Image (tube, rainbow, N blue to C red; front, side, top):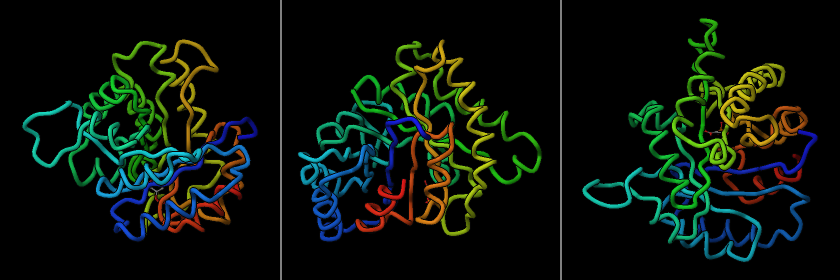
Length: 251
Ligand code: PEP
């Protein structure tokens, strides 16, 4: 978007053994000018504390890729908001399509997690997006509006402004994905923004909206130029520190 601030973040997904994670973090900690970009990285839980420690004195925020909605208890294999906070995270990604598709994440569990994140001072980054079948069936805008509405269910208007969203068409993500045409992103973003403004109670105070899905060095600038887009959320193209830093510059 022509308006600042502009977010550029990455999720490493299930990548990043300790040595690689530390060297990535050291390299981006050494970036001395982000040119107004708001950077963030979301490493796997196993290296999150290390990465957060190395980035503590940098502008780069660190987030988890998921969490549980409860604070503690009998939830084998899960990680809570206080655990993320104590590791140095300030953000948490919620509702990524891979989690919705493979791990049973629903709009309802995303909503519980949004509430938990805000209770514990984490900024939730909620991923929403339609499948190819939903787009072909002409219901993409309906699906997106419902995902937004349910993610924000029960929040006060003031809290709505503390959530972030990423529009990530399911068909645009990952190895099998193809980048969404910028005009399509602009059109989807306008519908999402209407829903966000409605939830926030007023235009201008509603959450930042990022685009994600096969973002790379060639297409970053056209997405960044879209009026309705406040940032880029990147997977594969930012899995090296150099790739990530180059994308932040390109935006
Ligand atoms: C993602 O999965 O959120 C994503 C943006 O991945 P990629 O950039 O690899 O398509």
